[in-house]
Length: 395
Image (tube, rainbow, N blue to C red):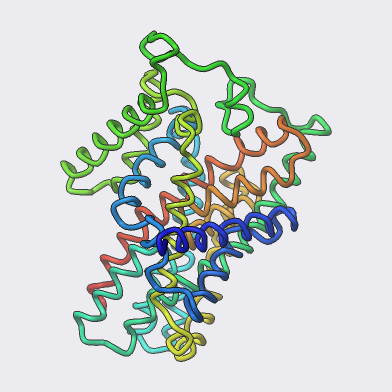
């Protein structure tokens, strides 16, 4: 009974987030609303282990994140992935802008240890926050132990609506161009929206009869690619993050015909896995309290403001040379504040809300989603871990 109650609570928060997003035409993103609900819940009556009680615990997430990333590879082709090198550059240089401004100005306002502890989670996700937390504990700097996770919590909440505004401006620009004929959709672009994929005839893998093309058959192949990806990452001593390898091999398997387009949606389990991963991310909000936040909120807000300003300056300067609008370049940089899966959710929500028909939604998705996904992997999966590893030595 307690497991079902926990599951209902988690899914109710997800539902409220989606309804608010739909009601406001994605002006208030669902992930922002759900994050706020979890914070309020953890600070009042919600048990700290509600997400694990709902079955979305560490083993589940360890499985779903790898196969979700392989799945995302089936939304793109190799040409599309290589074409996003500009988004990678913009995202990484945006992070560099954050580092420069927060280190220079932040060090003048706050002490060195505060700045060093805050920057890695500011430029990345939960992994960077946990690395810095453990590093501070090992160094005996107990007064700042709560800072990295608190930074992760607050910058995510700020990053969601800000990114939504940028994506919405870019979406309106793109759809206006499509309507007046100045922009045209690529006929050979991979289909990314659920409706577009559903309308396509089912692919026959290995020329097996239809009765053998079952959801389990799809899941087995995705899991094999994910397993192989993690094995390769291990052989490389994780010099390339396993998440990035999963995405690349997902693209390769898709190009070779081993995986069909939009594989997890064809298997009917994409939403289930996405909800589970989001729930696990929101579970990390239980690590902080109002008392902890109250003691360090000023430092966090100031450093976040400096970090976002650094991203904005860098992306604004570099947008034109890299052939992007300021809005799109800034959105790519902002993926450092949350990464996957929030970047996927935010982008698809905006595309759906701005578009007036399926063709427009497909056009928006193919133009914005690859940039956001690749930008998020570059910042959160790669850059933030490297930055955290370096900054641990500076404590």
